[in-house]
Length: 227
Image (tube, rainbow, N blue to C red; front, side, top):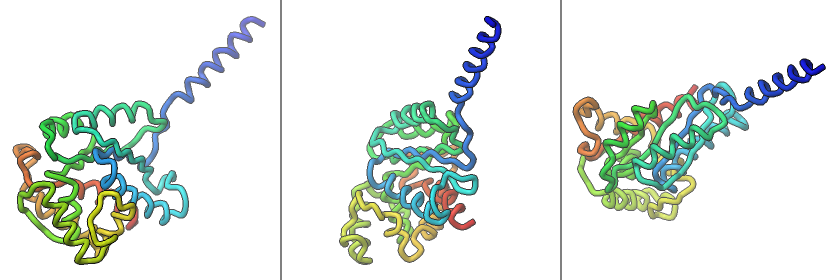
């Protein structure tokens, strides 16, 4: 009788441990952004389209699972936060992307290296995410301050009567706005053109101004919309 009770306890313990394991999730994405507004709202726009196209939840084998966290932290901290999120997650993400800008951060290059060493993919922009948004309308290789890109977007939002005619960081429909006139495909084309001369082995992202690799993440996500 005692051995029977011991067997039941061991079986219960094994069952409990089983549920502690993380479930691998096919085609799953974790996107962690530095910004708390524009970047997460942009990617949530893609997430919404994926849900609508699939017809409900995107937690299925054919569609990516996308969790987006707008952390509003510095670059080095963002890598640490991403690691924490992964450890606390209930699933095992296949694709981990960290999205951040150079802005005025001094640890930009190191944060990119640290993230890549952990197996994360980095969607960086120099100087800011606004450069990536600008590429939805026009090509540019001018080295401008991040404020200048916001000013250029302001003019474009006025010209094309997007939103209330002014560029703002908190537009929930920012993805659809900049995708007017096939903007996303235009941005991918413009980003590829700009980054064609970037040599990852020798060029420092902090000195490649302007520059962005956000198109790499967007290209992957768009592949689900076009399949």
